[in-house]
Length: 249
Picture 1 (cartoon, rainbow, N blue to C red):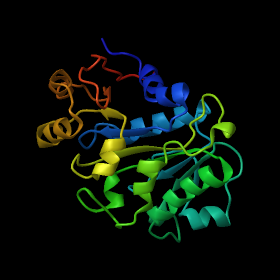
Picture 2 (picture 1 turned 180 degrees about the vertical axis):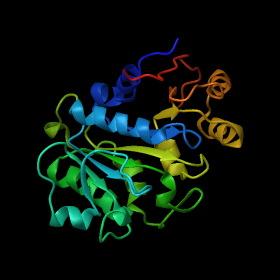
Picture 3 (picture 1 turned 135 degrees about the vertical axis):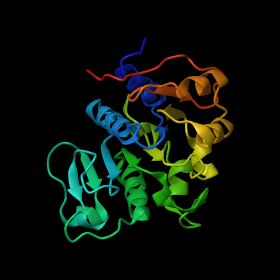
């Protein structure tokens, strides 16, 4: 029997609630299995539960937005027209907005880090399709990419004297990837939760090798119905057997 997805959201957010640690979560699945839908649900949960101060979303994949929030072309457009009122979510749409231009991904990473270090404002950054951050599989778009710093050093940035219980003290990252081979090792090694939708074939085998997924989880994923998913803690040798969804009602 499938389990209500709300419990998956609580599991994903556990490092924030228990240790104030920002999270790194990847959502993996074949095309059409709901990666963006799950990313949006996690984002909405973190914001609604006040586990992060704000959210920034890279959403220029399709003409229709997949995330709710204040729509801006890029960071420069956000500074020119600061979002007013709730929700505290800025969705960067790039060329999908009138008069748009390609999103400067490095500027988004700098924004999140600067807000945390200089103003103690924590955030979650949502990268819908990791391929936008790389030049080739496992290679950052730039050798000095700010994203490398986000993954390596952005988990715990706020001094203990300024921390609040239940609030992440760094920059959290949620990301999906069309190919499990895309993320550089920096990102893979810092990822703490893997959300698996329906995925099969070479992609699943590569994912198992990179993240040391338990055999029983790999065997189950191929049989997931549309909308079902599992959450696995990276580095844990056994799967808890929980299948979440497909209904969110």
